[in-house]
Image (cartoon, rainbow, N blue to C red; front, side):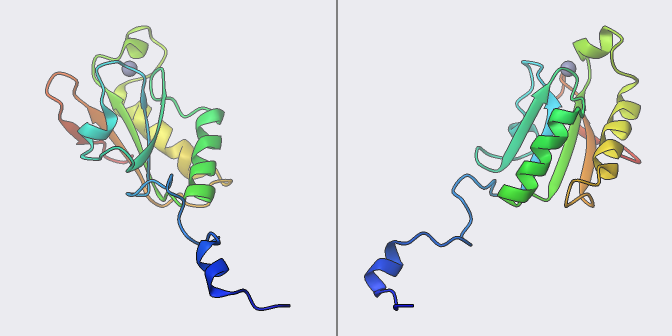
Length: 140
Ligand SMILES: [Zn+2]
């Protein structure tokens, strides 16, 4: 094999270098689609810090699990936040359980999903949409 001239080496992308799309804080946030939530701001994150997965009720669906797997495998994320919130319309419709229990179940589903390479740092929390305070959920 012929040695690569240095000029060519400098212009060749490093396959081990992080992608510019890699979340800088290595996090994935699963939260509700509620229009009052700015998930990055309430968690003290900025644009580019995390992947954000949103649906009605912050439910950990099969699609959410696939997205977390891709985020971890391709973009090297390690921390997963599951953030439900007070005054959730989905909960009012009776489609999710009591908030803390919903968060515990959602976080547990992520931890039990063996297709995810990283399941040790899953954090469950509830956002109070009135005050903007985020409370960690015990046992989540
Ligand atoms: Zn909601």
